[in-house]
Length: 302
Image (cartoon, rainbow, N blue to C red; front, side, top):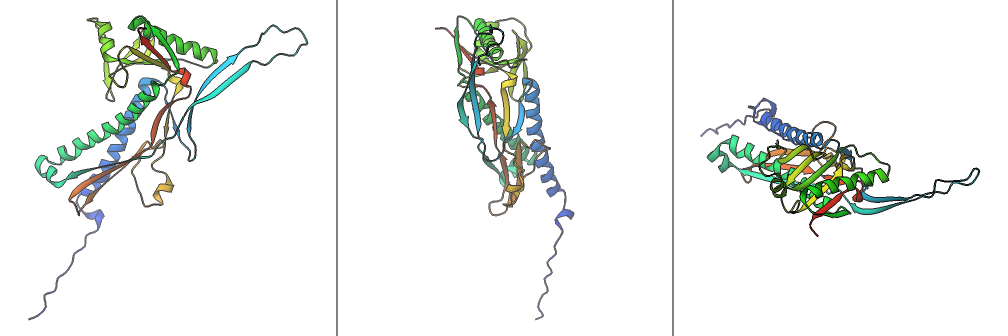
């Protein structure tokens, strides 16, 4: 019997249907949406400068004070130096965080790709954003400019006054102040009064409220009840590790990134051994305050 000749046909990847193109577009869409969301948050807050963290450096938050000497100096006499004290109050590092999720082929068969893939990507993106913000709220609660107030309204006013006074003493600009409070306290105070509340980036906030450029309405444990946090927008920086760093690429790790400020890297691929679609995210982000005593934490009550 003559042997049957079996021919193996190979098709170049770039000539296959749009599956691979769609994967690339999905990666681009994911990082673009993530970056656009952070840009929206920057616009809401006012400043929040993105700073690329250099390898080998740490994040340091300071407390600062100046003890002024008398300015009444006789002619020809030596002008005494005022004592400036700057102390490193908190130190941290930007941790590179690695995440992965998998969508099994059964989910695509059951719900369709639009639901199984896109909806899970949306949830993945939201949780990654929320993780950065949760750490920021925890950091804000360590603010050393503390005080007490009798009512919620008093707490809002006192928190703002404390940070403006602090920055005035340091001769630093505090153009706008952002606040953070518990949403239940806010509505208890507001009652039935009409006010425009906005929602964006998964955050609820009001703008231009009682002197605050933005007042964020959060829930416990991010901000406990009867607590108001405040800081000038100039005190907030966004540090990030660039996931598109060429040093990472030397490991054979290629992540899709966005623009010049690469906040996140994203990669999608199929795993034939488990018949799942895998998604990988790489990020290193930290919202940080330059001055720990530039964050006011005012508690309602004794």
